[in-house]
Length: 590
Image (tube, rainbow, N blue to C red; front, side, top):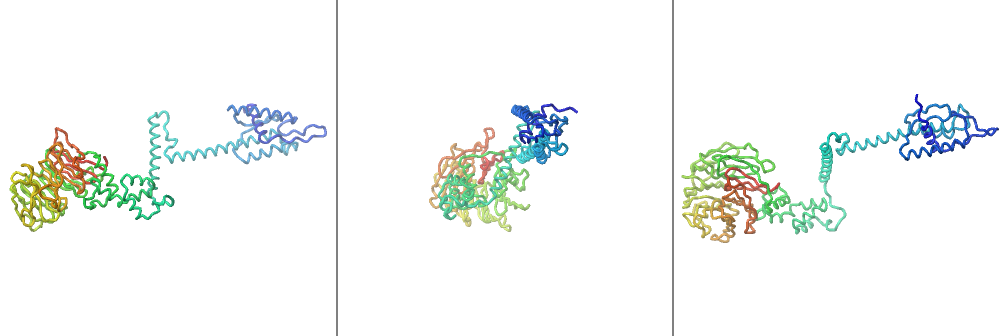
């Protein structure tokens, strides 16, 4: 067995001396000599042993400071040379034994006590090694806790890439840990948001007012002030999201779902959310997309109802369902409605029916949720326009007539009135009061292209305007209220008529900047107006409180220049039907 280096015994003895202190002096005999030697070896003078241990202790401390000292197994002193074996890590028990053995090693009996300084040192070394084992165990537990923390935050030590994996692996490891930490933070934030927000117990006296009074005070704030107030605390954020605070702002915004009279058309959507999207309409921020394409040039017409879109293609009408985002369609149509021999020129949705006007001079009636389809001959030439309200159908044709028809199943195809318009009829609309209807004609045989007829008798009630140039045909007309109308056409103007003020002159007009024919128009019933031009698929947005155009969106390029035949919009999207495609402008996610 190889003996440990002689320096190890000195280090162990020094450590024992420093911890226990000097051993008690042995009792002097009658001759003045020391007592019998212990198990550590022959007796020596106490003063020499003490000096030696102190010197060795200083040397050991110097080595430890330099980082070169190493703890090893102790060796007996000058005794029998027994090897000091490392003791098992018994922590505090062994340390206690060594501490008791050190001071008791003295002039007792050799067989009972046998205690010298070196024996106590050996026992202390064993106890010290046990303490080192306990420290290692405690350190292992600490590292285990650190490892557990790394696992929770997604940064496990074992998952870290080595140098062989390269910088890409290191970046991926850091990214994975960051994503895990972000996911944990998001979950905590969502959990905090689900907790009910209570009114702050301490704070300004303003927050301790009754909620009815706070609503009254906050109703005078503008949009920016309400946004800043919502950043103060969670309770104010929820309180300022109340629809009552945003109704006044929404009614002054573009396309927020409120009519001019204050009717809420989209009560299921929070008003604050609609005001946010309204700012995108005002600033012209949107994302363009293509919903459908077709190979041949067509003149499509379109209608929206709920989450469905109906569009005419050739002699068919197809129904598609929107996906949840509203900016895309399910590719497979919900239904296909046929019956015309030529292209569908126009159609409307009324009472779960589709009433269509075809180039074959016929009117078709289709039930949306069944296969019931009826068509009958209505005009000699193509039917350009049709409208239906209150169980009454009106149609206008190229044959210079307008006709009134009942929708009742027992009277389908029976004409109630035939009206000679002296001009080709391009557009038609029934009043919301169901007492009259207006026709938009080509303005070639009569000086006014806009005339209002009595729905019950078919007699002319009045005509609108008197200074139209020849050929200023009206391609689209719509009632906004029982006494107000909007019209557009070949004369490049959008006109707003109020029957209560004057029937001879429009109240407001907006001119197309590029002198293009306006094929269609649509309004939100309040401040927003959208028009479709005849060139380059230009869609224009207008704020009716000002004369100039707000924004213009060209949807086609020069080789594929196309009119906008029809457009519809919701509070989040605008849809435009062109010759070769159906386009969408997404204002919710610009």
